[in-house]
Image (tube, rainbow, N blue to C red; front, side, top):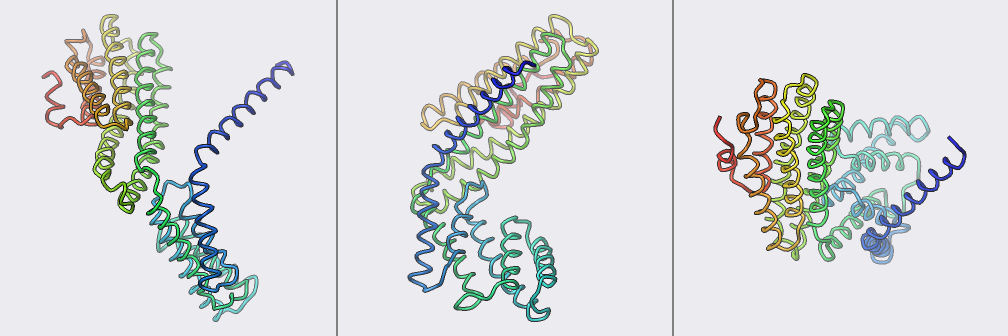
Length: 375
């Protein structure tokens, strides 16, 4: 590779990172302002109103509770407060029994981490419990006693909840973006399967399977986002009316998850069908058409689930149901000119995926199954 080629690639990479960084910073401006105001406000309240000296835990606990994590804020607040309090108790008891010193600090930290993991799986809870017990052993208690830090942690958490309550962000924004991204990936999996069939390329079908597997972290992240959004909709009066919409979106995600799992099974079977030339030219052409039509309907479904306006959302979902129903009505081996048993298996494996998509679009389960042609 020529030296100039390497420099060009590095420059492109650097430009891409800078552009991505600017986009992240721009979209994070409002949350950053909220986090700054909340941390400074909690610190000032603990110092000037409660009279605590250097109440760093008021600021840090508010930052942790308001952070960019997808975990629900209420859980983070509870983890910080409980972890801080239990850590101080554990550290104080072990300090009384063991005394102060380096090896004592190591024993206290190890015991605290194991105790935290025994009590709860939360990462923040473990970190806070371990940190507090370690500080009790290594540092002198602050003015007002060791539990001053617990009070500061509670102050920071309360300020974070007040910000969530009084200045909430729209809890539907992130789930909508996530579901659109998730459905785009599912549509691309089916398009890769269609391309693999068109070119009789089993390797490409295997790549579609890998892409489908890589979607699972997106599903897991979206479930976390929905939990956090549901919490915001519960705490903030301005968004309580959207809880039903978030519940419907959560139900759709369950069906999309099932559709993704079925797409992986379908792609695996398609790989074998291509390797064994199980489909005639006519059958291949028909199945490719089904896959492309389904992918287009999934794009329409993504637009519907991500739409803000109720009327437009219902129109997109209605169109998606109609397109999926029309395609589902063809899912019979005879209608697709499929002759061999292995080819029939490919068609049969696509049927439950279509039912999942119809249910994700809001169709009743029994009605979704009735759309499929009888075998």
